[in-house]
Length: 511
Image 1 (cartoon, helix red, strand yellow):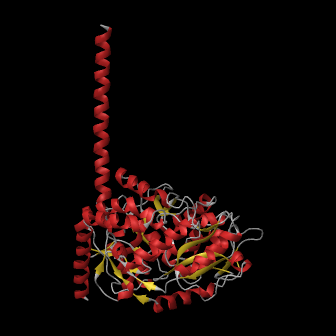
Image 2 (cartoon, one colour):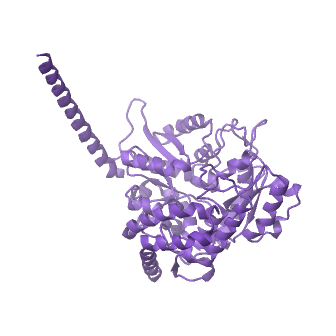
Image 3 (tube, rainbow, N blue to C red):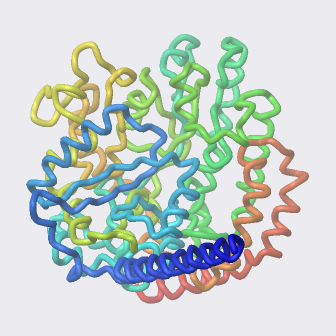
């Protein structure tokens, strides 16, 4: 009898569980349907009685300032009054970005504003339906953005006839180079003006290794080294996702496989030689840490970066000591540079109207922008003039409680305050930098990876097998590049290149 009662209890419990799961699935499906088909007209008004629409913004950052909660609350006090909303600011370390965002989309987690870029798989994110089209939202709530950004910049965020990303108003070109410790440059009498190419750094690193045996001459990681920067938009225009690029030096619109070019082999050999000479960090192929953190900790001399006017000051704030920059390529403007920092509104956004209004404020409202950029006046900076700031007495880049230092990521950077050690004419220098940069033959072209997404995925798997060892000089390129090339072809690289060529030719013909 007891057994029969027990069985009945289990059956009732199971039935109740099934009903609860069914109800949850029904509610979840309804919610997902609403979010995936989010449209400005369906965005709900803020609740009455003091409740506000809550938004979530995510972006990559290895630095989470300890005073972020205080800055967030200060910003929210402003947003509540301006647009009836609150913003949760969620920096995500780049080393876990793809895993974390992948889980967010898979679970339908709320993300309203998400950083994206040409170098961060923008086309792939659009193809996966992760972002919503912004055209109508821009027309209704982004008139200030449209007045600030030239049409060509807005067009760079367009795919399949719709705008999916809003670019930050900043520099739209870059040169590639290295950032080095100024104190050691002075100490050893290093003449940086003689460095014109990456290979010219060899004697410099030899001197650092000889005189500073406890210091790593060049800090790198698998996805960020001088080699990757030269291959990715330094010497080539990558044309978006997947194999196939334009050779900058050729002036041609023929799409080539970078791995099969002489430049690739030349600099892969250089990285191998430097690794064998002991110039690179021993964990180069596995570390996920930001390179400048090693310099900040007093463990490294130099790291590679994309450069722009005033970057030595930005790097000095990152590291907390004076840094110098050395360009090894001249400024180059590609679609990736125009889309190197964008924000998108995701399909899991609960308040797309309000999300666009936040973007509008970051473009048109200097107070909101500088609060996000630099924190709270009097606590994290003091004003020297209307547009010039400094650290409060007793504080510096290392000790200040809010040092996000990502002004290039948000809104209209030309509204961002300048630090007292920066050139007062920096924003004018940005304009000149943009105008004087060499323009890619494919500037404005956005590749749609959807027709060859399976081949790109297969090639990405091959890249993961070989690229870390090549990018950081761990293995002899003469021994592995042949295998790398053949496996890329087997994975469908030629088909990806042909599709890029087809789309590029059609784009060129339409202009």
